[in-house]
Length: 183
Image 1 (cartoon, rainbow, N blue to C red):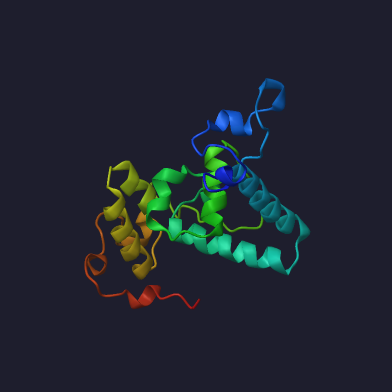
Image 2 (image 1 turned 90 degrees about the vertical axis):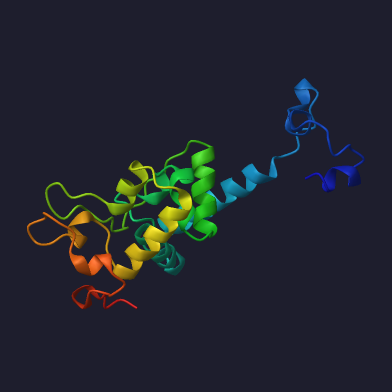
């Protein structure tokens, strides 16, 4: 915006309250580009999801993949963006997610399989690591290991009686019993 203002004959340091404010209060009533972009992305997302077309299917696949990368049982679009974004690549969906967070909006998306706890006293690993206070860089490394081992919850990495972590998950050896058929 600061590059456009001088071309319009305005000082680039002019307050955004004046630039975006209503004319009734002495503003120029210029639209906020970031808000317009966020609303446009949200309209596109919701419009395709309601349409149930081919693009809707592709968006649902992208949502499912992002959900697995985040490692939570709550739809990632409704999670606190700053806490969870540290270990996922920036995409169009993360842009929508950030806009939802900054505008305090929530979205309900149906048809996306959300992972569930597998048994009593189970917990999602990434949520637990956040709760334990791990830093962004550490969470990024932990998440890479979690994805490599194809695990989501504590039940995925403990022995059958749940008393200790299976030693295979303490190494770089992949558990061949847990290899996904999805490529």
